[in-house]
Length: 76
Image 1 (cartoon, rainbow, N blue to C red):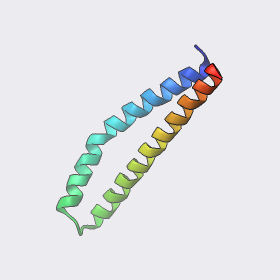
Image 2 (tube, rainbow, N blue to C red):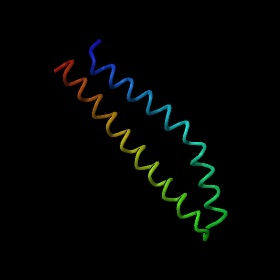
Image 3 (cartoon, one colour):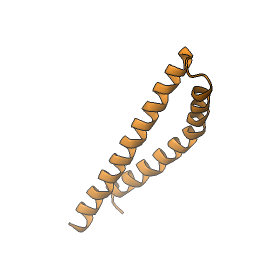
Image 4 (spheres, rainbow, N blue to C red):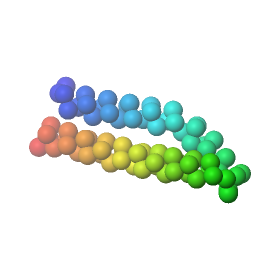
């Protein structure tokens, strides 16, 4: 197995573990926001949820690019 495959698998597994471990915290922040809509702290928690969504999306896109790149190098 080549290095690119190991990097791809490691990136996907580590990213998945990190995102799933943060999921519970994001759910509790969302529950806090729905209860306290006009609180100053809600704005900060909303921004952290938005950044979590952005980072999850970026992780998914990079994972797909790494998979396609590996297939291109391996079978191309």
